[in-house]
Image (cartoon, rainbow, N blue to C red; front, side, top):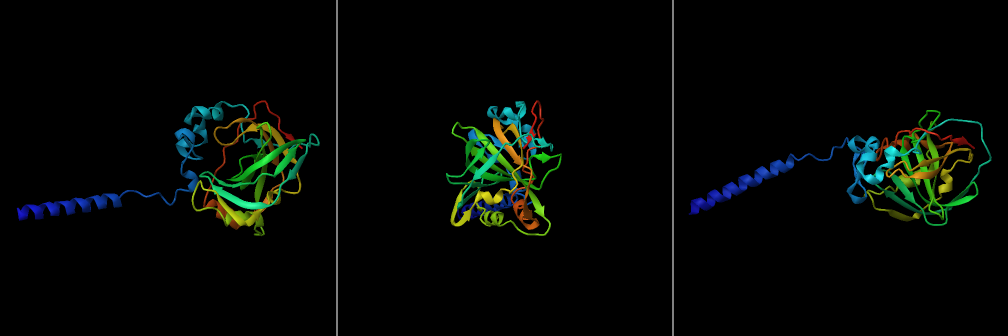
Length: 271
């Protein structure tokens, strides 16, 4: 009986060691895979990404609610072509300083803003909800991509969306943008959890160039569900960030831009 007990204990030890070896061979998340390549969960179990089988060319097939991504005829982004200004269409910003509220939402770095920030677009007021970044611009201007694009997302009283787009260009002299620096230093380590930093104030107006000439057209969200009816206003004067700031963001996300979409019967105007 004693020999049987010893044999049983020996077999248990051998099986346990084998299981440990199997666990050691389980592949970990590849360090070469960027955060943008990880697939973040959306509502009802749907997933989308900027890469691979869940990337932009497949968005319209991932979920019924995303069908507009492949069927829509007013999709964004698009290639914008310079034209002489068509009219005096105006943008008037009323952005104010407030505590930094930043989140890494699994697709980009986003800054949420408190109520009281707004823009008046051609006489109509829209409240600012949040702004976020795309590495490699989504819109192109005369076929040219910029290193990054910043989107300010607004909504009016009727629930209509308006987005102001700002291009980010590389500052060859190496000067960092101070407002961008405050955001980058406080990107949360945990995804999908907003961090509020009362000691850091952000004023979105400092991310808007002084020259407000812009392209206007009717388009869509550039991420699923790609809803149309979005009032797009893309400024054609960029702000500048340093090479280091571009590199810092690329540690989190790269190539988070939907490809340009067909114009169809639209005629974007330069204002």
